[in-house]
Image (cartoon, rainbow, N blue to C red; front, side, top):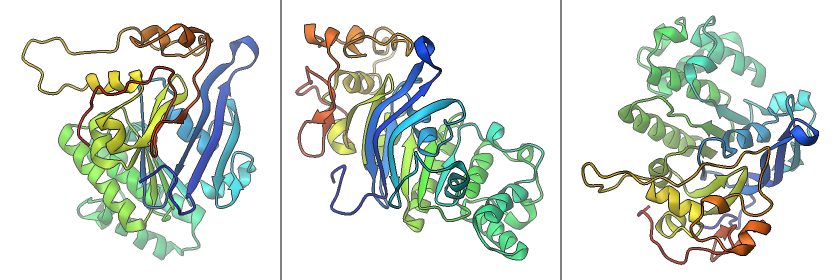
Length: 333
């Protein structure tokens, strides 16, 4: 599988940039990000906290407009929705492109019942009658695995466990049958068993509804098990992307290699775990060259002065590095 198959991409992002602030205080949170997602395909966005993953999702939906400036192209159904007026974007959000946010307890309104919160989405994006909306709400709670769905419509978020709240978030996101799902770390703060259930649920629903999915996570194990494609982000840019099996088995960017080495696997007891040395650069003062150079063991002189472009590195692979790692292995995907 390649990043661009013969079919027309469901979503095509090109040169996406989002900046907050202005003048010397401007913060380039997302810089020249490009990727595409086909129908039924799952793309994983991975990277450390602050790498720009969540802002990328919010920029696609136009949720960054109020606080920042977004440029570039997000092609959806033949139009660049970066330039789409806000009134029209409200029809797209939730109806055609849905999003699951982090932390369901803070994303759900604690003052409204879960049934009413599902009903709001259906009322905004469908022509269903009140009785049809109630029937769909019960159906969606049942689909996401909440027992006694009909009796729980009148309950509030605090009456659900963490895993069940996340299921409610998924039910709200998918109620209007969107064609694209943006999932921003949907398993944050959940225990391992519930994480697996939630991810399996998202994947099965994506197949049932034939949706494209963008999954933001920092867990490479999740990517290996659930995604078709992966894009690795660092300091607001994509530094490596390609098919999951290809990237995780033989990462070519030193940052991707570092992420792979950071995954605990067959580590003897009382052995220090590996971590990438140093910290990510401040977005307020990015270096002139490669943003990863200060932490990179493969850097050369050009890395300090020039920024590498994201270029092809084999079939379906792209890497932004002057000194690509030829073969250090990875994890079986």
